[in-house]
Length: 68
Image (cartoon, rainbow, N blue to C red):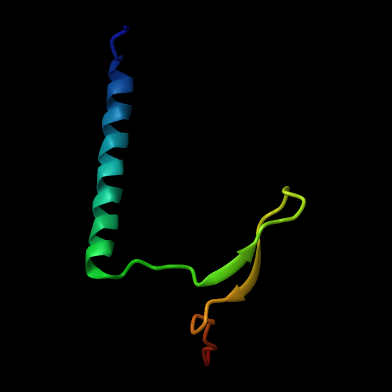
């Protein structure tokens, strides 16, 4: 097994640090009850090549019009 070069070790350390920060922020959102869910029903593209299509909104999750 080859040893990590210095640049590889720095990159690995940066990625692990970034992953740890993101995981901690996600756990904080879970614990405070502020995790956002997208309230839509979607249908897959029948041909399988395109993006999904929004079919409907969950009850009570329709976007509200703003007076802007």
